[in-house]
Image 1: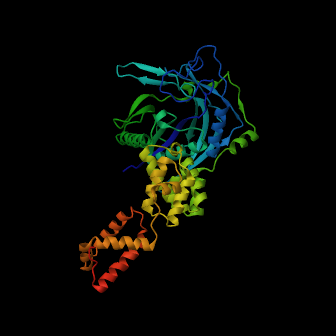
Image 2 (image 1 turned 60 degrees about the vertical axis):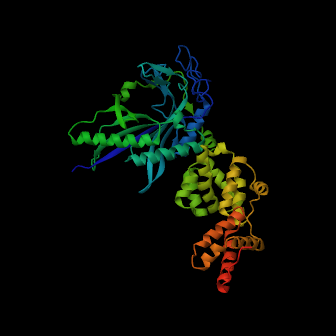
Image 3 (image 1 turned 45 degrees about the horizontal axis):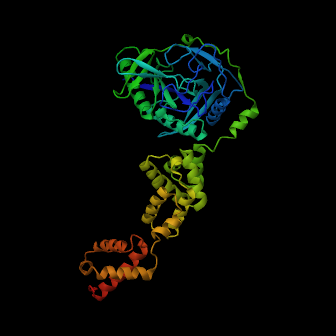
Length: 487
């Protein structure tokens, strides 16, 4: 039986986080009010001339460096000609012959180990507008997005499965957000994925006929679309039919890809040099100045956490996946000097609370110094773990120092042996039947006593110390066959 393998390349479109558009001064900020952020140039009016946004070039270079690309000191813009209602000029200003970044790579962690995915190029271009299709068959156009600066990241055909493509897309998003070149909000269209896919018999050197699935805006859709399209093409080939070279769209509700149009060839776009813009000439000094703005990137941080702080792989990867989370974690460790305990809190209570509140870390205004203080209070056994979690809940909402919360709510753990002995004596006197049951062999009653002790101390009893005192008192009663009587 013939075995097939899937060949996948991705084209990832990322809107850059500039305040204005690529070639005009219109705002590039996302808004749901249609046609608010546009001008005659965005609308493709005759007589308008583009002026390049320097910040967009800087952001594109920053992503290129993060992806280990060669930054071209000479690059230029071209016109890509095609005719859709959301492209007001009838052409797109992009980079074809001389892109800004070339020949990079990105390593991803797969179940089979680290895999290197080649980056063919990154080019800078303007986004198109957005078509809004109505139920009555009419379509409307919103030009707010027209002219927003994009980078298109083109991979080599190195991916072989839906799982690999999903991992790549997720990790790439994290990397780009690290550089702060884009917010990568897929729900707002800041990051969109096109999938180029073909299948071939295993062992065959030539690629099969390729289809393209456009504008996938979630990682789940990327994985589902690849799985469906791979199976569809294999079915065609096994039945003796040919795969058509075409552009398809993904229908999320139906879980299938649907034909849109025949796939264009390069000649259909009639590329030629953009006459209204000069070439981009970058000096080595300019490239190096951008390199200096790069933070420590996810893989570097993950490896450092594992090497220096001996964190488990999953924890290190989770923390390093977000720049904000990694910065918060490192500042917490800087204060408490307890990296494993800090990792436990950050990957546990911090992320749990953010999910509950539907917040990202930057929106929470949490102070890592306060979390570090809380961790030290637990380490010093001034708080039990359960009480510390209650303090954390209050701290998350009030943004107060845990010491202040403890002073206000009386949450310091009871560690005084004399005080605990009095509490335990009281509990035993008030529960003579439970004492008799315990002395009669019902050892599970011990847990009942511990619960009553916690009630008496409002959960502040030092558990280990209370258990030790209770064991001594019960042993004394057992050995002397002298149950404590009520009163």
